[in-house]
Image (cartoon, rainbow over all chains, first blue to last red; front, side, top):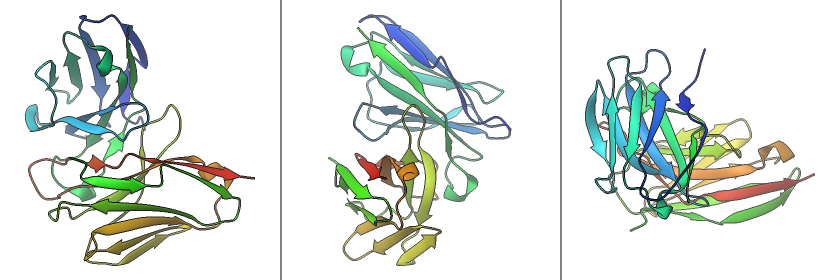
Length: 115
Length: 114
């Protein structure tokens, strides 16, 4: 059984550019969440989507946006990249949005480096 | 404002010893407290979790102790093994809402020497 799949695994971008990160949830999971993990810190919540609707948004600027597709996969978009956006971006999938006993599995992440 | 404070930042333990990591939270609405284990190049993986209606939960060598009045919880790893060397994160969330947002601590890098 495939776990949470994220692509690409590594990415180098220049300041000011735009980036799109992709996530495929575990089969049957309808909710996808995105987290940013800066080196040496714990993951920070960015977004949660469930059934293609945004269910939660963390304290991130409007440069960050996301969407979820009918097949429940998701994209995280970041515009006007800053050096401080360099981080590991994690995707987590779960069956539903708000309950803790329905599984919550992280992917291995996309390592974004902004130069 | 850091809602979940984790200590220590790093920990070195001898094989067979006990590893103890502590966390404190501020938001009294939190009602689910998981611990995650993360190896280099991987995403966090759920290790064990507890709800505030119990004071202790044990799964194999891993135990969570929970003190609701002090708003503190800790992870104990008994008989620590070199394979346990990883970064450990405590987290907290308010379950039952419209979304499931985990608030993480800053992490503890555990090294178990053979």
